[in-house]
Length: 260
Image (cartoon, rainbow, N blue to C red; front, side, top):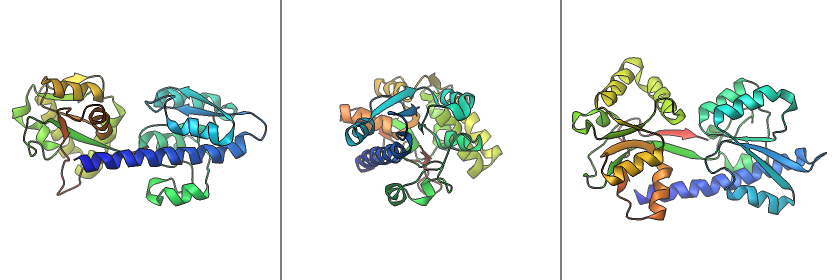
C-alpha cells in the first residue's frame, strides 16, 4: 500500500516538472509582446503549486493565476473565444480535456522535454493537451477491517455495508468518469446493477473525498470511494490515519485511473 502511495508522490513531482516545461514553452510565445503568462487553473491546490513559483524563478516573468471549476473555466474560454487572455489551461479529468479540444478551445504545443517525459498514450496525438498526473478512484476501507474486506467495486454493494458506505454525489466529475469507464468495460446493464446495489445500501452522500475519508476514520462509515491521493495527503500528515485503499479487481480490469 505505502509503495503505491509513494509512487503517487513521484507522479506529482513529475507533474510539477512537466507543468514547468509547459510554462517555459508558452513563455516563448506569450512574452513576445506582453509581460505575463495567464493560467486558467482548475486544480484544487489553486495558487499553491511549486511549478508556478519555479516558472517565475526560471523565467524572471510574472505568472497570473485565474482559478475556477472545470465547467466555469470551459465556459469562460468559450465565451472569450480568440480574445481570451489565457495561455494555459490546467484542468482535472480527461473528459474535460476532451471536451475542451472538441470545442476548439485548445492549440497545439510541444517541446523536447514534453516529448521525452510524457508517453504517447498520455498525450493528445495533435499536441493539444498533455497529461501531467494520474489518479486512481478506488474503494477505501477502515483499517479495523481485514485487508480483503473489499476486493472489487461490486463488493461495495454487498448488504453488509448497508448504512456503512460513504460516497460523493452523482454529479461529481470523478464519479461520472468512473461510471463512463464502467459503461465502456461492463456495458449498461451490469453498470446499472452495480450502481443500484450501492444505492440499496443507503450510503451517506458527502461533499468531498476528504469528507469520505474522515467519515471512515471516525467510524461513521466502514467503506467508501475516493481518489487515492487524498489518502496519501492524510497519511503524510498522520501515518496512523486509520484508512487504507482497497485496490479493486486486481484479477480483472483493475482500478479506474484518470488523467489530468
